[in-house]
Amino acid sequence: MPEGDVVYRTARRLGRALDGRVLVRSDFRVPRYATADLTGRRVLETVSRGKHLLTRVEGDLTVHTHLRMEGSWQISPAGRRVPPGDVVRLLLANTEWQAAGVRLGMVDLVATAGEHRLIGHLGPDPLGPDWDVAEAARRLTRDPRATIGEALLDQRNLAGVGTVYRAETLFLAGVSPWRPVGEIEDVEGIAALARRLLHANRDRATRATTGDPRPGRDMWVYGRAGRSCLRCGHRISRGEMGAQPQERLIFWCRHCQPGEPAG
Image 1 (spheres, rainbow, N blue to C red):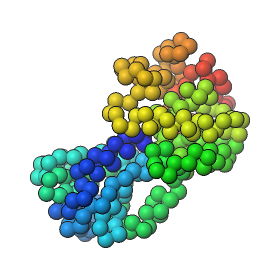
Image 2: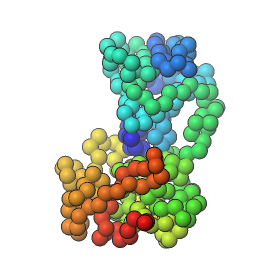
Image 3: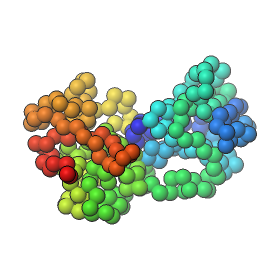
Image 4: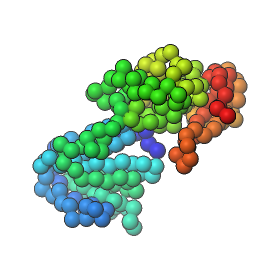
């Protein structure tokens, strides 16, 4: 699933194409909003909130979308043919550009004043203007028995962190993903580190957490199961965290992040 840095860049791309321009085409291809029409309304701004996208238009309306696993926004000159079949779930266009929402996981149209119904549960966004590291740490430690690996993926604690930044953050912090949050002294430092990694990658398409963008050396542990740790040389481990069917992949170095999986 795209993480906060990808969604941030997507919001910027949408903003460059749509913000400040009047829509001349609005096509919601989801049954719930099949009759909705935003034609003639000006797009005010497009912003990201964690893994969520908010496109605000005149008339106190917000288009809320979520990419989930396979979704994307494809920007092209107005009038360009869009992908065939039923993959396009939303099309927004002005006289210059069109944005096709392909395989979007979520599409909603709500009052801008009611956005909280969709995103109000989210924790602080590391890439948002209201980032609050102390609040992020407070939320992460609400359940001291939860593993730090699970807590970091809970969007109610920290909005925008996914499996990539969870693995890389915990490796750099030297903390096992299986360690209970209540046993960690510097949770605030972990939250701050996650923000630094996301912030460092928000403006570049080639993600790297090691400082080396070359394939195979761009990540410390994520996607490197069975390979040698770039720091200590031990073999990188891979497992699953979370209750079924919500379990997610986790990568870590047993030597640099001591602590075995529970059970």
